[in-house]
Image 1 (tube, rainbow, N blue to C red):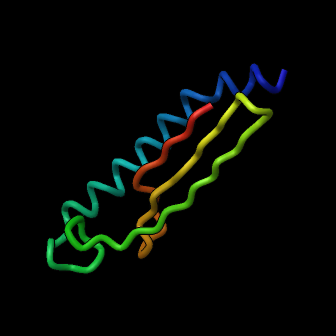
Image 2: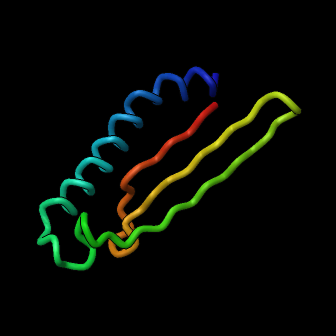
Length: 79
């Protein structure tokens, strides 16, 4: 039951997250390029997790954020 609910939500949540990332990147690109936090002078941080279940199933998740605003810029995950 929970798995089906998550599968139903996946595309909607993914679309929302993609929109947030695109908006944050666009905001940085529209900033004056000599300003700290702009696309050319970005201040970012990243977090990553690598999980191994058994010896054959690997799962990697990471996110890159704008350090000044906390906005997510990019994310990736594998199942």
